[in-house]
Image 1 (tube, rainbow, N blue to C red):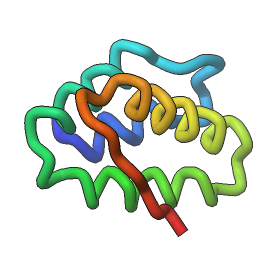
Image 2 (tube, rainbow, N blue to C red):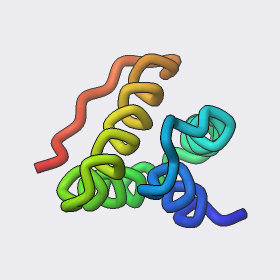
Image 3 (tube, rainbow, N blue to C red):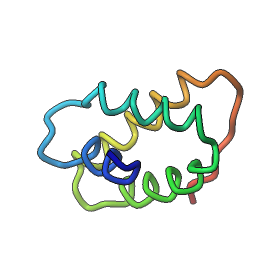
Image 4 (cartoon, rainbow, N blue to C red):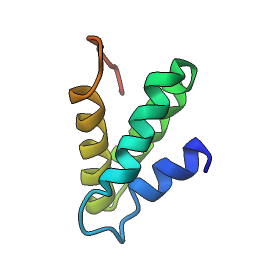
Length: 79
């Protein structure tokens, strides 16, 4: 499954709670391939600015899960 599809599925508004399997699959891909990091941040920014509150919450959960599971310190600038 491609990376953008994973993000779409992990943040779809029909989910009642985070899909942790997809979230950790995304995190695994990010830690293995840091070149997709800009695309990840761009997608999350779009999702956080989405009108749907559930999509926003799921995107924030994904970002938080990424932040908590990194093997290194990082800083982001979404806006």
